[in-house]
View 1 (cartoon, rainbow, N blue to C red):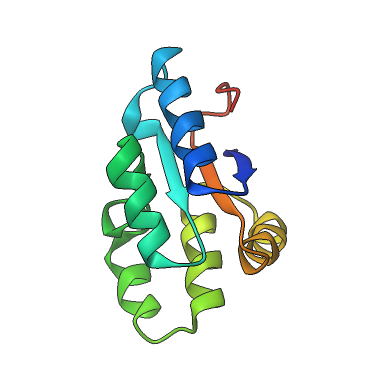
View 2 (cartoon, rainbow, N blue to C red):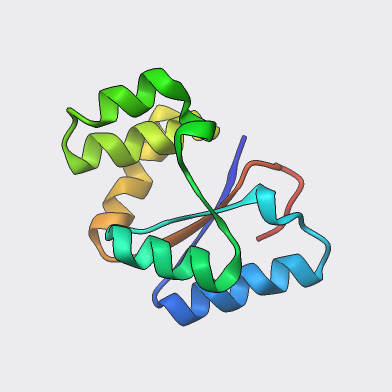
Length: 111
């Protein structure tokens, strides 16, 4: 089960990701997801957090996402990296509220 933490600003998310790395969490274990692709890119670039892409979702989901609306895409991405369907729906609402999510696939990671 993935662990999720939400943040209000890019700076908070970047600082939190970098703090995880100094605590020994591997960069490839931390993912960022935001309601806006530009925010996701900025946080990923400035913190080395991963974006949820085809490597994580697989080709099938990536192709399906081309035809899905934004909410369906976000939920599919979250489910592919370990969140339950119910969790994905709840966190999608938080994304709709403008939150930025840091997600760790490693359930032992405290984020």
